[in-house]
Length: 270
Image (cartoon, rainbow, N blue to C red; front, side, top):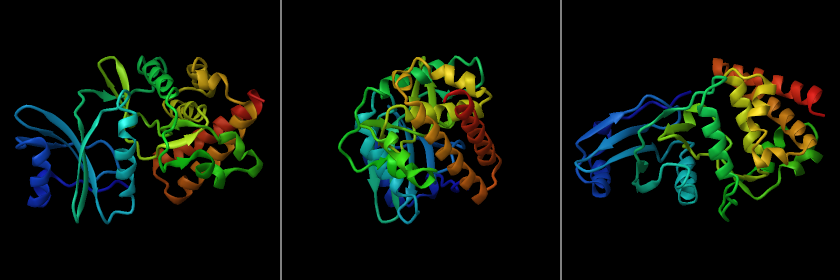
């Protein structure tokens, strides 16, 4: 369920004043409609700069995602909009990013955006996971593994994004930028390409077409067939649980895609 949006004028005056200490006087604030998980999501314009501004109330159960984004920001500044400042008070937790003029990615078959996403994924694949308290891939997907002995395939030292929903990709100036680092994860480098494959399939690619998109990614070329098959099973179990809990059409579609990918891996990839 999407979080209800809060506009600039609805924020407490003390919170707005704290933001303007970082930005200068705000001349306009435009709330954006895209995205599901932020109560505040808007573009702030001042006399000299623009900022993308997002956040949640301190009492919100997923407020911890703000910690993740702020913590990982310095390590991904080359492939994501820069995190510039943070305002925390008794009620709100808010982060300001550089504003980027762009659009969300298209995963339609033949879309030129797809190669831009894989270019960015290649750059991300070169980044070792910093020594920070992030989730590990083995802990995230262990509950969904059919055979717990397969969990070892997920262990690695790469920094992973894991959520390649096209709404989390900005196409700007001929490159793809990753946004919404709510789930930075330490694990095997091939997990991110696997997560992208599911989203490409949801965008209209067949399993074989999505696999071919990723075949030149260094991490995907090294992916162990048994490990990928086990991960495909975990993804199918995870998305089935998500769809059972909430029958939103996109969640049901992702569950169907994950099942198709599992069948593909079982019959075509060993």
